Length: 218
Image (cartoon, rainbow, N blue to C red; front, top):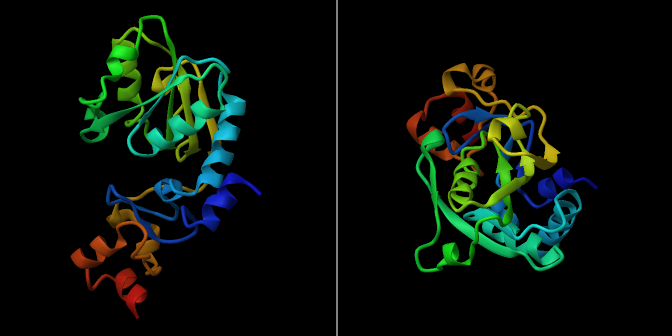
């Protein structure tokens, strides 16, 4: 069974549907990997697969809140020589996002120039959440070995576009195109909108007479 099969089984992955993403764009694919956080066996299986494809001896594994934190700890537990597992906060929107260390944790005091790091996250769409983490580490003169993710939505996002030596991806998603509501082919055919998970409920509140909304509630 593939990771996508596992994610579908636990309600973290929906495909061939009509969903609204956090951005407000529509897509036939919705991925919410946060729901797996309390599923320790599944997180452990995923960390095992990540362990197999990533370097054996990083000094630090860092993930952005929230799932990046969970995955950093899970992967660090799989690695030899017990790398540090840290997390950071990411704020802002799109390409304007910035990363910072949690003020009360003092993580920056544990870092030394020349250390090596892996950045880890659950979902890669544009790279806007992992790029500031990479920048944060490089500001401390940490060598970033690469970025590791469970699922990549957009195959055009590569190690080169992220500005890192390596990108490790467990699963690529096919057919995960996104559309502005006015250009959505599913809306054009009146395909019922899934209200949840995702933000279909918000679209329904704003467009109560839309054919896809009416089809969903009747």
